[in-house]
Image (cartoon, rainbow over all chains, first blue to last red):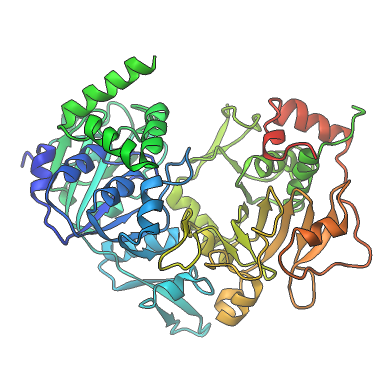
Length: 287
Length: 253
């Protein structure tokens, strides 16, 4: 069977400017940050990003990589507003396709099921229908005759997700309380890349938890990256919590262009090893 | 317990009342005082309520706010939570950056949506919430900045917009209470516009009218918000919020 292990650089090497990329996790939780960090340093740009947005969206927007964002929100959870996202919106840096949270789920579901759309009640009466003038409604063919919103399929060129464990073939496992929508992102994409805290033997996948935690199936995965602490600074329960001190430093820096340049120089200019080393130094200073 | 309720404690009680008689449904509070209120409702008059830990677990006990649950009774990750919304077996109490007289709510952005002067959270789940399960709102600072003539982006759907969108939008749409630091509002008027339901002790009608940026329906007689009983006050102070987090969200008047 195929060994799909890759470096983060190899994953990003498969991405092209102009692609539609789905990013797993939710807010500041289990985001594939190691992959995002490499993407930041690449020349790939002009992206359409689909995300339950967190610092992934913030960083990509700050780096000018986003042409269009499909999202219901962007947040750092313990810090409600994602400062790069808000700043980018306020300067008109990208086009926003603003959908309700359930509409994003249904759009991904439609893509997974190879359907053109899914009907949903959400959106009706709200300005989601006004600001997305391409959104249509659909009338039930049955006796109820209900008119519902039709969420178009959110088909992706590529998906990036971060899980707790995976084998080299792309079977991915989450060990935290919430799968988020990572399996949908992978199955909605033409190519999916899974980073994980640790690569384990297939035979060991059930050593830590039951079969229902095997969220992502290898048939939908093109590349596997071992990236310990690769969700940093977002949470990756139970392997690590959100790094709140670092997130606060990120948010503080993001609110001021000069501070941001210094932050990016210190943390984002090198490779992943350099990043993790800079984070360790940051914590030594804070202690 | 002989001291009377603080303004924050009155707000807790008013939030709890939103879940009275709700039965076996999920209480989804957003904000500290609504979270204390939901727990108070569960410990008193609405024992069948379901509560989450704020993440993916349904909790089987009622820990203090900020403390971890010791009993888990169910699993509710985001995808199941969104599906639960569609079943209607949930009453959410959301925040609002702007709210108009019809109950349209905005948490997305301030100014023109195409180029907002202030980007906020985004619509989040407000559209799906309001069309599927009963919705209340919590506004910790009642002001003309929040209570506006017209919201900049309709996220949570109000009565007028639901009616205009047709029967699929109105079918499960219900806005219940709007709880603020000054009083409780509702939509129990013939045209479903916002009405002053009760005043918190110490607040006048004039204060509420002054802090509201649209014409509010005000009945001839406005009652005061019910005062918590001694037992309710004990539960709030000793069991649910021993650290007094409520007083940070609504400081003493």
